[in-house]
Length: 239
Image (cartoon, rainbow, N blue to C red; front, side, top):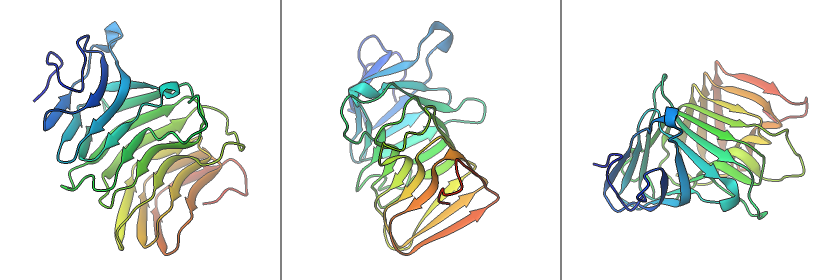
């Protein structure tokens, strides 16, 4: 395993800065002493190769600078292992310099082949609105999605197209994606479903101040909603 005193392809020698490609099969990232200002800063994109696993333990906090457009690319497995007291937190500060889509976390095709990826008690704070997604699912095997909080702080700018919290681009026929005990706040599109023949289940979740809560641009998408709250920014907002 890897603790905060070891050096891996993911880490540089001052421990706080992280980035690069995993070189150990399983890398475990533990929280730093936040009272000393010890949060992780991403200095290059993090890449999880196929058959490799990154585990983020409860209390880990990672800062991304959007102007750098560094992302977390998952071709293997990502396990975000927060809990109710100590969630894992990603902060995205500023905005990209380019107008290209910037996706913070990408599950790429072929990722999560062992079906071990999970997002559990995970908070993502986005400071400004820009084209792209906080989470892009382009894999046919989805991670579990429980107790995830996504928040965008800037007032919605309708001139910015294709800005969303979560985007689903790929699926197998009959796939099921479940959102459980989660929330989305302040997005142009909270959830964008761009592939068909999928069942979307939303349980005990909240959508606040989003222009469009669920935007579906594909056919044959079955949506099940139970015990969830929707507060829209205007009456023309989509469900």
